[in-house]
Length: 365
Image (cartoon, rainbow, N blue to C red; front, side):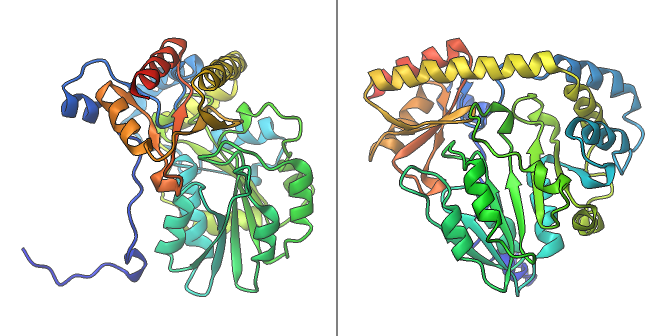
């Protein structure tokens, strides 16, 4: 059938976001039963037990619409983060909030600054809103170049996305670097710190970006997620913190019921599950050190990570190695979509999964 209906101009040349290959797809394609996924930075421990119990308790209420304002969840977050209730907004994952932010603040006259080899959703939603995308290169050690971002600011700049830790490199920008950067950012530019992996950072040099909001700075937003350390990626829940005036336009464009009933219940319970949070952080730290040792033994270079994944340099064979791992039932993330064609991004899994990965890598290489 032929159609004369044309999509909006923001979609011209836009490639859709491609998530990690689903386990089911690998099973079908290669006729495998035992498949492990180390591609999407999911928590190998599963969901927070308290969140899971809260979801089960909430199930009988599925015939009702959820609270469109997510009041109880926002209240729990405001207390946990020591900010005002009006300074918190929740959404369908952090990526849902990225979309809301772009819808609220961008048009054809706007410019957005992002880093190369960072979370591609920034690029997508900037392009959809027909704003101009400016990309700064990574530093020599695969970090974000905040100095380069500051130099790229113009009168048309509206948003700067700072992914910290950065996905897919796992690097961080430090408190001193952020302080120097913010001193150069004019008031008309909104800086969004995307901190999806912040709970996994071990460095005492990591910035406390919420401080800027508590101190009343009107051009800072901090985004975080429940997907990683709390293990509830499947219900899609993220949140952002900013001055209430900054969040008002996001509320204007948000879906009426963006955060479902189960996600709200799970989020409130997860915030109370300190034991699971600590266990996830310790488990990830141990797995990261194990993989470091094994990559060193195999002679593989990697970027030191502050997250639950490691960017590993394979070289020109990276695409082939990725395919060979798939045939062995191991899903990792190829680097082509991040302009890092010689790399694989590998999620830190369980002990057994990590061992299986190393044995397969050794055989393939």
